Image (tube, rainbow, N blue to C red):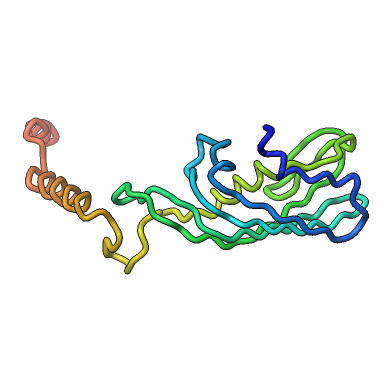
Length: 174
């Protein structure tokens, strides 16, 4: 994972207390996760690390934009992202995920790779419905040709509401 090395924090050499880190998530970052929905974007990540003897407390703030396909018209659009997350890293014998934001890493490890967590946080903060911005119930910003095709298909489907092959099966229920 050579190019993901900027997202690795070597905490062993850090003194106890607060530390700040800054990262950029761009197209090259998202290319390492081809299965993800987000493939393009520019996000600035600010990480505050509070190092204690028993736990690492990460406060991660993400701000920027990503590019997504619209669920309605399939054209790409830009979506603003602005969120923060917390991650707690404890030390133990082996790696384990205790909760959504609490992980245990082996005491022998001396660094934490945040790349997978950053990738997951971006995807967790995607809206359920990813469409061009505009008023609710409108198609502002969507590809007009695609909207016309959708309306035509819906109209054609409504015109033939029932399949005549199924009509004879309804008689069996009587």
